Amino acid sequence: MEQCEKARGARRDSTVLYATLKAFHLLAVIVWVGGMAFMLFCLRPAARVLEPPARIALMHAAVRRFLAVVAVAVAVIFVCGAAMVAIAWSAASRAGLRFNMPLDWYVMFAVFFIMLSVFVHIRAVVFGRLDAALREQRWADGASALGAIRWEVSANLVLGVFVTVLVRLGGTA
Image (tube, rainbow, N blue to C red; front, top):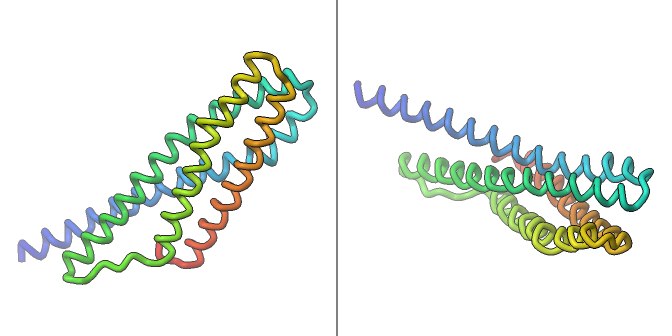
């Protein structure tokens, strides 16, 4: 009897932990995908009324802050996602079942790493070009770097929306 109570308590703790991890995972996804939508559909068009020096300085400051926030979101997404897979694997193992990760989870992992590579490219390469252009007051180069960032963020936004819709339709995450 006592062992049954312990097992039930462990399952309840595992369920609460899984739900908490999923909440943080989803909140981090919302920050990343929602931030990209805000940058593309709100900030960028509004900044077009500014002259190039002011526009590039504003976008540089906003992108710099956004990249820092996304770095935290990426870490949260990865850690929580890996922990949720480990919990599911552990639960299957405890039940004596073979763990079969759902196909949409594989897609989620693959798209995450594609989006991560785009993010790293923006942060390590393209933002460096924007930073140099701002420092040296080369406004045309700054506009070019912002254009490259816009295209890469657009691609990531499409991927983020795709994987979110796929996982919600798949219903296993």
